[in-house]
Image: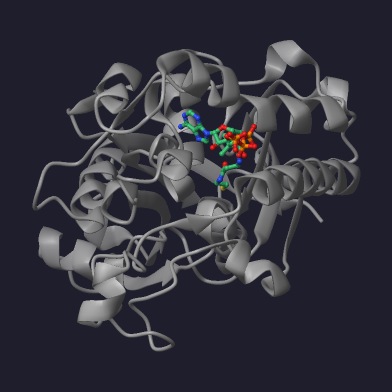
Length: 326
Ligand SMILES: CC(C)(COP(=O)(O)OP(=O)(O)OC[C@H]1O[C@@H](n2cnc3c(N)ncnc32)[C@H](O)[C@@H]1OP(=O)(O)O)[C@@H](O)C(=O)NCCC(=O)NCCS
């Protein structure tokens, strides 16, 4: 069902420090060519010591509000998709308010891994059908804090960053034409952080075992990511009654070039519509789609009336896709 809304503005916040594949060659047994061939990644951004997820989220949110011409206090709700919250509680969205000295807007996190931004968009679309008039959806991560820097199979993949979008009801010409979302919690252990929560609270032993870092079966994730991202996109397109060749721009979750390309091919969206930033930022989990959206807009790749498809997959497993008329 068509849900009228408008993305009034987007913005991004990326830490200035660049970690290249050459830098990683000096840290673990890897090579620039292995990383580029398997993932398409050349470099990623790393947050400075002391910079938390809410700091990047606040920077992106403020810039997005400025671009939308509104004050953060005018927002009805702030939704932050993240897997790397500042603390287990309160939410990163509340820490963001703390950082900005903001009081009033409802604030909460969505824990859906790399699907967090599109989960947030789906929730925001529902809220805009009610009384809400201005909603911020933010994807923000400091993945470098949960990466095991001794594990070459994961540490080369991730990066830090944040992106924000300000949503309003619009004039009825733009909105969500179709969407799909889902999850399969049976596969939770394929990609997870074993310790630091109520199941295995942090102890000297869990810290010594690096159990608070990313544990992942990369091959299994790869296969499920391609299937779920393409199926979700296909379902959202069908609901939108949009053919794959009508899509002007496809912004998939930016985990890895091969995953994005395989998901695009299965969906049948032409190759020239795929928008990729993974080469420069790696996998920023929930932040990849809003950062890519912001760069695509800046480059003039999205104009009013365009059909924009987004699809994501993440820990959980979770998946989500959304087809918008801009
Ligand atoms: C991680 C990933 C790039 C690995 O690629 P792959 O083709 O599946 O590679 P494999 O895991 O089969 O490993 C192949 C070999 O490369 C080695 N290898 C792993 N990481 C390496 C690295 N950074 N540098 C060099 N060699 C590496 C492995 O040890 C293995 O060696 P072996 O054959 O001697 O055992 C890939 O599985 C992937 O992208 N998975 C999805 C990850 C992801 O996106 N997660 C987040 C989803 S939201």
